[in-house]
Amino acid sequence: MQTPHFVRDDNSWQVVNCLGLSENELMIHKILPVGPLQCNCSIIGDETTHEAMVIDPGDNIEDVLAIIREHKLDVKQIVITHAHIDHIAGAHRLKQLTGAPILYNQNDLPLVKMMDVQAGWLGIPTPIVSNPDDTLDDGKLITIGASPERSQRGLTGSILHTPGHTEGSVCLYLPDNSLLLAGDTLFAGSVGRTDLPGGNTSKLLRSIHERLLTLPDEVAVIPGHGPRTTIGSERSSNPFLQDL
Image (cartoon, rainbow, N blue to C red; front, side, top):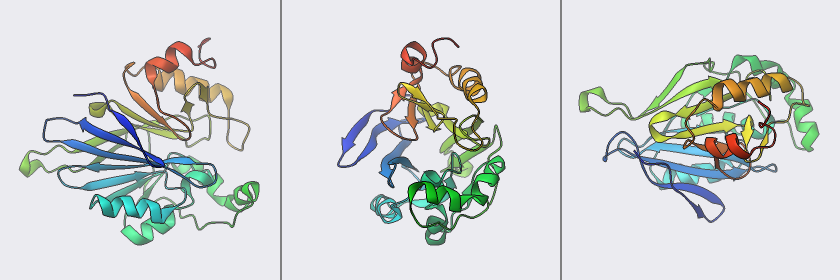
């Protein structure tokens, strides 16, 4: 196993030669900042089967589709870390174009019902946002590329329910790839805001302490906005976490 190696590619980040469970299982990972708030949308694909998942397609769906076509990916899941407009606004359109189900935690349904209010915060049109096709409960496994008959285990991520930024906030942890998609729970040198509906500072800090800081130091963290970091770096230097 190797720790993911990231390089800058135009306006996005991509993972290069990230080994999964064996030398023949490489992970495709493109990170595209989308929308007015530059949400980090991740496109993760299994190199062998080209099955894929898209995390937080908040906007710029044509750009997301361009990456999908470039790598000849078959999108199997659309994973939403939380139901803020900048993370979920493009999911309905992506589902229309790919047929993939939309997955997010049902505790964020109240935020979906106030999507018009969220759009007003940014001064943009209200997007169509669907109810989830399945909820992302704590411990749920998200798998792509698995083929038992070919002895291919593919890529598997585990859902970590991390309430605080919103009630339904989740992170996606891929242990075999030392990778955490953290949504707006944890950032490089910061943590998620809690002053919006559903936010709770004590819950957020407890989620980070109990669910994220228990992960290995070498785990790469892709936050919902801004640059990548690692669990070890945030454990040692994030000013919001030093008293935990």
